[in-house]
Length: 206
Image (cartoon, rainbow, N blue to C red):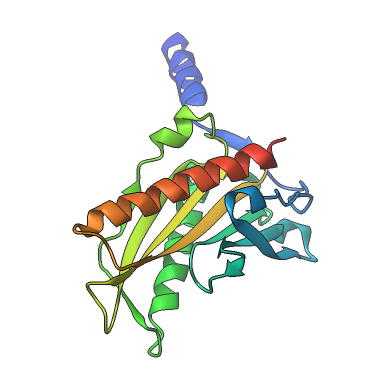
């Protein structure tokens, strides 16, 4: 019996279980990211509280919004889950990836999604103390149907939880006219993503 109790204690300590149902995930502020070049263009608070709220930002260049270039969408919700555990976060991440795939499956789309979905290394966000907002992520790339070598996109989706609400971020970044090596431009896009999310969650937490 003592051994069983020890095993149960170890399982409880090592298993992440958070309370969720009945909380309000709609009361979120919209951080001002204008200092970093981002403009909030849409905020949606859903009528049903379990659906939460969403914020949508675009990156501006010389005061002008560039359509479909550097988009950041943030969602806060709980979907009436009794608990939010790792299985739920995995499901939310796979749903986010499915949404990206559906977006690029449209016949009239200019970009073709590549079969290169990879898990995003979130350790850096943990170094910044953002574990509750970013638990894991996936990034996928897409190429332009006509300009495959000069126009690409990167799509990233991350999920996390603060113990009550699920936090999901969708990031879309366009890559134009890469330098000698596209990986350099790809790395720059990742850096912009990391810094933008760091600024966003830092201001959101104030």
